[in-house]
Length: 207
Image (cartoon, rainbow, N blue to C red; front, side, top):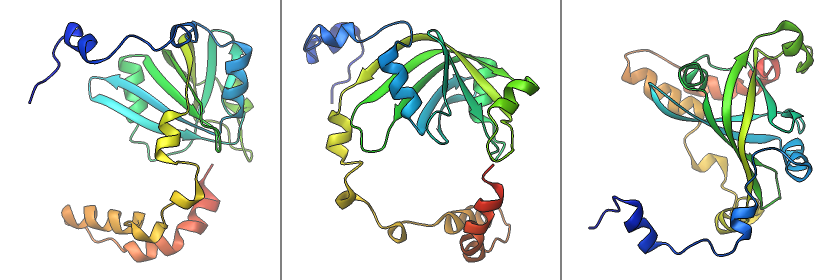
């Protein structure tokens, strides 16, 4: 089995970009076209890297939760979570981040990379409030690179195709997984009760 270990080998396997448009679409700011995608997106994936390694974390809220405050700056509220802080620790250690914005029923995505800092200004956090609950903090990202990704990955995966959707009961529940890992650490946990109460828990604790 041969491994690619150099850029020269990589370029022998993969051809040059199919068209100049693949290069032109990358810019160093958020233009009006990319802004429309970002402001319509209710979901993104945040990628970070630090001393603890690489992390990818989902972020979601109603469309418009990510704000384009300037062509070279976007801001993302950070909400109540499990307080593992994997992404946040990485950002403190190394501010370089990558983002992919997804929009339901849209094949194209927008990718952004840049440098992030964590802001805890009270007024800023309050202006991102939902249901009266301010953001825990706000990620302010200086944009270095932005471009759109074509539909191929989402078309291949049939991500938005209802006929490809998986019935939730076919996979382990959150309670089952929590019970498994609790047992592994010698702790008792009622996974069934957790699953049965999760709907009400979410209503009270989502923000």
